[in-house]
Image (cartoon, rainbow, N blue to C red; front, side, top):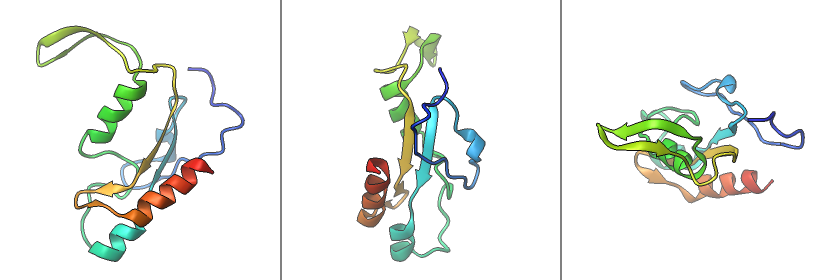
Length: 118
């Protein structure tokens, strides 16, 4: 991938099991939001990762479907062998994690929308 565009104003937020260096030329932004979650669930409750990192595979699957690069010789447990790619393999990704094991909270979703639009 070419370098990240100079005009990119996003942010790569560090957190548990996710360093700012986790961002690269493909994943150019990553943030997480949990103030609504903590207000409802409590800040002492254990969550997967207090960071943009995906722990269930859902975010990684969604991102690879949308913008995954070309992969040769892939398969699923020996089935469906072949090539794979996402819908826009040269696209860049900025992730905004707003949902947790117990669900998603409106305040976190709206904060992520605001940051994405900004």
